[in-house]
Structures are given as C-alpha cells and as structure tokens.
Length: 385
Image (cartoon, rainbow, N blue to C red; front, side, top):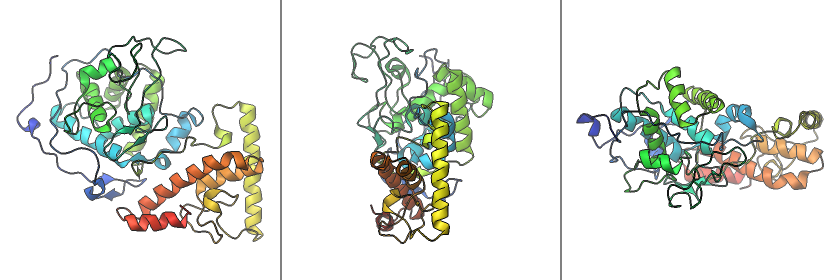
C-alpha cells in the first residue's frame, strides 16, 4: 500500500499532554484528569494511505443511537449523555497523531467523536462499558452481515478472529470496523503492542487513518462530508455525524466516568420514536397532566423534598438536595418515574429510572468534584447511592 512520506519531525515519539475539556460548554481540567486513561505517549505516528480506500469502514446505519430516542433527541442530549474520559482522550490523541502523519488532512477530534457517538455511543452500546484502558467490555459486535433485513452481505474474511463469526463478517469495536477494512487501517494507537478494534485508542486512530487517506481538508464541511461518506455510504449517516460534530466543536459535551453504562433511553415516552403518533400524543397529555399536578402540589406545600433517587413525582433540579428521607432527586429519573406513577406503571419503570438516576448523579458529582474521589462518594451518598 502506498503511503505518504513522513518527515523526521513527524516521526517524533512524544506527544505533549493536553488539557481535557470536560464541562458542557468547554471548561477545562488539567491532564491530571487522565490518570489511568488508556495509552502512552510513545505510540508510532501512523502511515496514511496516499489513496482513499474504496471499501467502507462501517455499513450499519446508526447502531449507537437508541431507536426510541431517535436522531433528534440524541443530538439534543449530547451533554447529558457524556463522553467517557478514555474516549475523549483517545479522540484528542488521534487528532494529534494524524496532525503529524498528515498535516494537510487537518482532522478535528470532534469529527472522530461524532462517529464514535453514532457507531457505539463511545463504546457503550449493547450493554458495554468503556473501561479505564479504553477497551469496550465485554465487546461490541454488530449484526451478522448476511444480506437479510436490509443488511449488507459480507462473507467471513477473518476466520472469526475479530468478530467471533466464521460464516459472516460483523462490525467490531467502538468505531464499528468491518474486519476486512480493519486489516487495511488497523493500528496500535496506544503503544501496547496490540491492534485491537475494541480498544478506543486503536479504533479512533484507525478511523483517523481511514478518513485522512487520499486528498482532502477535513476541517472544511465539504472535505469532512466526503470523508465520512466513504466511511459509511449513507447520506443520512453523514448528516447525523456532521450535526453531532458541530455540536461537539461548540462545546456541547461533558466528560463522564469510565466503566459506567448509560441509560438505555434518553427520551420521554412522548418522544419515543418507536411509538405511533397517537401513542406519543397520549403520552404527552399524561406527562403534561403529571407536570401540572406536581406544580400544584409544590405550590400548595404538599411536597417536602426529594424522594428516593428520582423514584417519586417531585424530582429535584440538578444537584439540589431535597428534605425527604430519600436524599437528592435527579431531573430525568424523577420526571420519567413521575410519569410512570401517573400511568400506574411505577413498578415497571422503577428499575429503568433507578439506573437513569444513578447515571445522572454520577455525572453531576464527577463534574462538581473533579479528581476528588472522596467528595464524589459523599456527593453520591447524598443521592442515596
């Protein structure tokens, strides 16, 4: 494979540690926040193919987007959803490596992050978590590419070595690489001696190599769109990635802890895109009534504070503490549970809202007390966790 020649400075082994942007609108933490984040600073600068690759990197539409929330809600909840610190580090690191490998490409980290969000919710789809080493655990494997139900048909190319399937290929890892494409661009992005598509460091850098292959300035809208269209041959995919990339570039993201899963639903029932219009309208009326009842109760002095981590109908606001026995309530957890209670489904929704409340509480505490583990534990305790 032909590659661009690299100057001596491009092959320098050390990268300057970077500040990690963590708050919803771009406030910064020092690189001390990267303790135990994956990767070392001695990974080799990758070779970038001189010609663009014809084979797509991914063939699934939007595997990392919950169909119940839909694309619009996924975009509007980017800050609440968060980016695991290991993933954020990997995207920024890949940007630096590709800047040395191919300065003309001008690959921005936010474009990689947008692809990571759409492909796997930053390594957290299908019950996975992204650990502090940047590895999706237990592992992300796409559907069998058997040509059925609208899927592409790709017979096995790796003997099941990457995707555990010896009949058909499956997309693998946080950036959902097809095994055949991974063979062409897979790299060791963190210097651990392995090329692992489940490792966000390797996968993000490999995605950068794929996007930068051939000519193009990815800091421009047209250049980025062309590269993303090669990555996945879908116009709707390109549009969604570009929307998310623009939001991330504007600071609409937060750092979230590694090794935590995310709520499976980032929407109210009235916004559930898997429901019919009539069902959503009915849910909207129920939600409106529940909100009106809650306000009336608060105005009448009938509520004494937060309930058990969002389990009641009077959720708190953000990190505000209630005066009830359950500690602090959370915004989404309490609201969703309140709707469930109003519909007589409180027992059904409780497990989901408990998970949602814990996720919200963890994010709030990690942002309020960055790098202060003891304080974070105290904060979580105030939520009842």
